[in-house]
Length: 170
Image (cartoon, helix red, strand yellow):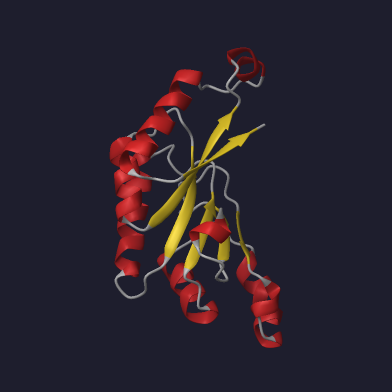
């Protein structure tokens, strides 16, 4: 998906949460090492382990590593919709200076067309959905609070706003 969305260009993956409201508190960069000088490689341990991501860190990724594509691995990205909308505002301001693209993860139980449109408007190239399974029995056995109908709605809404998707299954 990253290769398609970024048309083969180098990219920077951002794993974790974008602010201090994240209940998981995890964050790291996954940078293609062949693109780093020895000096920047040596600096990585000081950059990698973080519990938040700020505008400054995104700007640093753009300035220091010339990143033009970010992939946010954050299972909680849309748990608090206001947090997601605020993130979209923040990244949209950053995009005024450089046309970066990005991808995020969403859960099907609380995402809607308004959120998908906002994501797309702020430069999101695709959504990685946590479908997990289409079987109600399997979803129940995994304690997943989603239904096949919610999966259908997520796919339908994504298609209606023109948002490419990736489905993740356990």
